[in-house]
Length: 248
Image 1 (tube, one colour):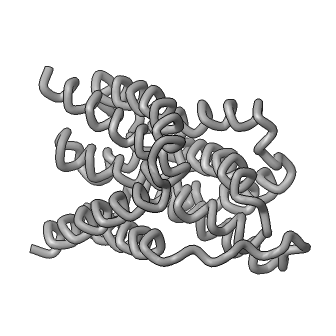
Image 2 (cartoon, rainbow, N blue to C red):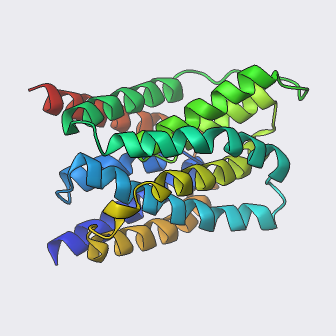
């Protein structure tokens, strides 16, 4: 019962953050599963992929109805990333838990620092360099598969900075990329999915989906930059705690 309550609360908070910030909130899923619900790092990254896939697919449908998804660009970006996502997903099950924890802490710290920096203005839309776009898509897929994070905090800046999308289109299109990459990574973890505690994962995912709708309404009332700074500081503290826990 305690785990169920914790799953509902954690899922709701993460969904609220995801909805309010438009991306990045799911990076807290793995530490929540490890430190609140007792998952191992490998099980937590697999469960996080399930939660991220369901949440992203649900949010994708809403953005698609509003016309904020560039399907061709998103599918091309995902096509480059799905292979690395699958390979990294298979690799994650063979790595020591401490290595996964340190890698996750590093990515979380980098994400928090990026959020704290002032945003550069988006470049004019134009023809992106194929090599740079391919490398970015592949890197995003690898991070998604290895660490079980959605990667919205990486995908949105990449689609804005590399491809030249407007912010609203980048948020919607990133959900398509995240959904495809997460499904690809899960396909090579099929043998571990049935061992997950679905009594925890299911309510967690459901609460995250509902929280995301409330977060979208919350973002209209509160200052986006202020919310992002608070979240970035919390994420930086979580990264420092995970790094300390792994090396001690």
